[in-house]
View 1 (tube, rainbow, N blue to C red):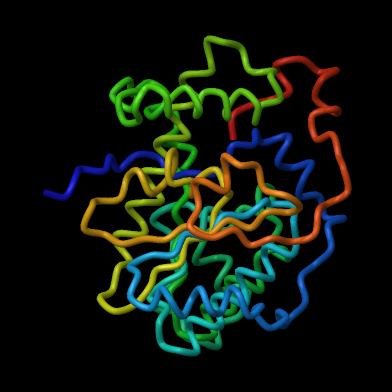
View 2 (tube, helix red, strand yellow):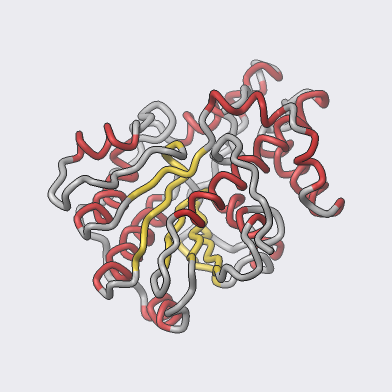
Amino acid sequence: MRPTIPRLPRPGSLLPPLLLALLLLPGCSALPSAPPPLDAAWQAQLERWPAVDALLLGEQHDAAAHQRWQQGTVRWLAERGRLAALVVEMADAGQGTDGLPPDAGAAQVRAALRWNEDAWPWQRYAPVVMAAVAAGVPVRGGNLPRSRMRAAMQDAALDAHLPPAALALQREAIAEGHCGLLPQDRLMPMVRVQLARDASMAQAVLDARQSGRTVLLVAGFGHVRRDLGVPTWLPAWFTSKTAIAQAGKAPSAIESEANYIHATPALAPQDYCAPLRGRGAGAAPMK
């Protein structure tokens, strides 16, 4: 029997809002209009997954090479008639481009998705999204609307979704994602939000399923981990694969929780938490 997936707020990433904003400042380089060809290893892997219901792509939000990889994957699947839909963390669940023509402009697409420029700079994700639209493939949001986050924070039923060891890992990830600034009494509510986000994205992926085609999910890498994220909300009959893009060497924990690691050049070292430490716990608000 297919498990019930709570239709709760729809997900985002492990990073708090202020920290995410720092990562995605307009100074980040824009993506080229056309991605480079997919590397041979990734193409070969895609060929080995022809009938998978969903392919979950995990990214590091500030690594432009990861969005180029996503864009190339969208085009590769669409050109072969294998792409059912593109689900993105960067738009709220319930929003989508269904009904828009392939020649729809960026303004139409942004309006249909109710794109939040403050959280997700459009220039960074436009090539990924517009590649799907141009191919006649619907783009749908999977993120948890902010209006539903408080209900998730108070839903203790979510605490039982993961086994105790996995739940402890999720708590650790949330604490680290908030730079150790999150008060203890807010930690578990934020874990619940993360769980609800994953449940929401899983539901969006399930809703987009088409027999013989693949739904592509684009999200932060923490959301696609097989032990903690979206895969834990998908029913047993639903086939999915996880591919995580990693800037530099992937930690062993990440390697073990993906079906494929897409290596990209390491980014310059950066202490993302430094601007927050002087401001205290209040500098790490909920996204």
